[in-house]
Image (tube, rainbow, N blue to C red; front, side, top):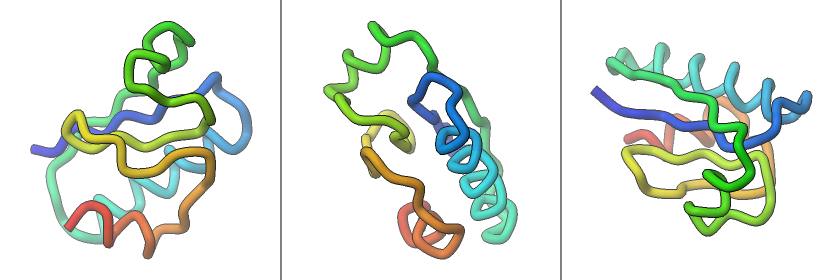
Length: 77
């Protein structure tokens, strides 16, 4: 099971990244758990200064932008 974490304060871009990450994982048929990390102190622990960000299995994969479903599918493979 992949652990997907969306780092962000809950802004519209963060919500779009959550939706795209869920869609990508479902399209690939992988089991996943999604966690929204909204605490700035926790976000900074990942070394992330720009949100939204996508973390897959504790590895930061995307920072400061909303990737589309196809881009996220490539990051999950």
